[in-house]
Length: 430
Ligand code: SPQ
Image (cartoon, rainbow, N blue to C red; front, side, top):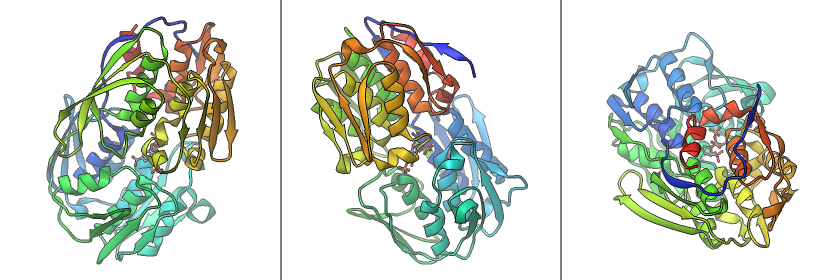
């Protein structure tokens, strides 16, 4: 494991960062490319460990995927081109890989076993195994299909109308991917809108999808055709620099090429409400996914309340938003965020425990946290851990920038899941 000493006492961050490719879109580009007919070329693919797990699983399913310079080239042969894997499929740390791949495998009449790392072994899977089972797939796993290892034999599935108990793009996408192979129409109704990359991807591959409010439907049996995908920068990765720029004194950072899909931009809304000095220049017309450059400067911040429909639009940014709130005047309340408990770690506990070690005053609640601001001078130093969670690791590296004393990070390696060059990019700004 080893401890990594983080940069502390930083007095200014200045410069531009080209944000690496969006993780959610990179996963989906490979999955759709694999089941489409013909060649798909993906530019700006995120070479992070999670997306590489997706690539290796689909290679095991018989799909030819080439890495050419900064492109991934996928030679899709349609749904029927997928073959029974001879070995277990290992998704590593990636919840997106396992849940979306289950939706694809639900329509395939062969057997597959799926495993992941220790964190994946604790993440709930009946949220997808139950609806996919209702469609007709045969799935089993530890605790009646709740935990890995999972085994699946798909094929002969029928469309359903599913009212999802949680707003989850992974649940929605898994059911839609099965629905594209099912008899009839498949509909998912969500309690709140989650990220819509799968819906956009279906259209990009020449398919149709009907969206009415919180309901999304697909017809089974429609052909998908290989295409070109330009992956925008990941707003969830940009988020660490947005917060760093807002809280480190005398800073001005421009984040280039960031995806601005409205189902993902909750952090921008929250930062503006808190008084952040943030400007956005949209550079690409809305087509497949909107893109732009974001500039952030240091400013005085005030506390806010975050809950309701905003939560799915910033769920992965809540750890870094919690840090931001420690530097705001007054109290910030995060609620309706139970889902944080079932991420790579229980992100309510890991955020509260690790930030408390550095001097923050922050309290866990059943569905979020309460952060008491005005801690600017309270941030000292200490030994903290990512607990194997990439977003916790990067949040702590940003927290260290405003610490007065030494900070060491345990399990730094987790950051490679979504942002392998994170520390190199951070150093460019110093
Ligand atoms: O893939 P994984 O491990 O689930 O990754 C995370 C992350 O922080 O990178 C969540 F832990 O992102 C999810 C996100 O929280 C990625 C995702 C997607 O691509 O569809 C959707 C969200 O999860 P969910 O459970 O709300 O659908």
